[in-house]
Image 1: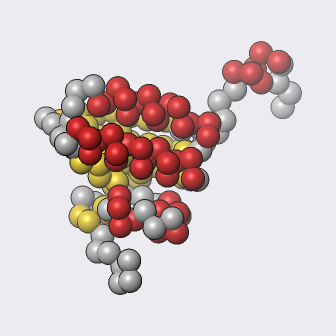
Image 2: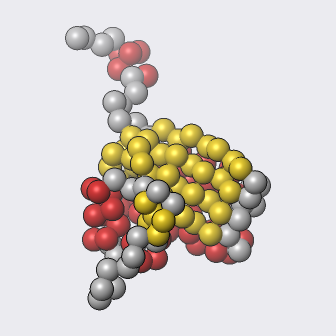
Length: 128
């Protein structure tokens, strides 16, 4: 397949970050799909800023559709947690895939971000 210059510039990477937003009461859910890296960082930061304008009590990052994250994604999660804490809100990380959970654990952020599976907090691992 050959792309023209216009098609190549506007082509969306196959695993580009997409974000769906849902609000119920004082809870806002951002469902992430695709890959969270430098290419999607600003998109997620803007989605978080937009969500925080309504001052939710709880902001949920649903990671069930997230295929990949790197340190850029981790920094956005920590930034989000800190913004919410200043507003008196809570960040919940929900349903990360095993590879994303490993990245959280490797960075030792699992204890701080408390990932949840199906709405239930995973128990902290001994020694953390």
